[in-house]
Image 1 (cartoon, one colour):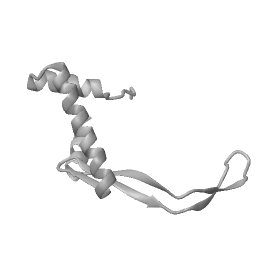
Image 2: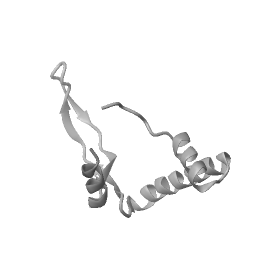
Image 3: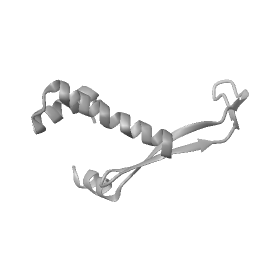
Image 4: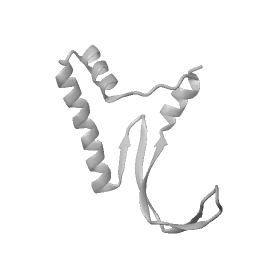
Length: 98
């Protein structure tokens, strides 16, 4: 399976092709959407996009970890992590594609 990255420029180009906005307007639209998602994650801790999935901010507590190379124990500080849960429709679409 070839590994490709979908960039902001790719999304803006797709909007330009399908909607007919200028390239600059398309890029601005993509930036606005991503900024809105980030703001919602910061303020509310979750974003649900219908038929796509949910983004959730979870808090991880401090814990003891181990360096796999040396075996030395180290403290891992508490932090927030982002998790994604795909919707059933997205899962069905992915599984139907061969």
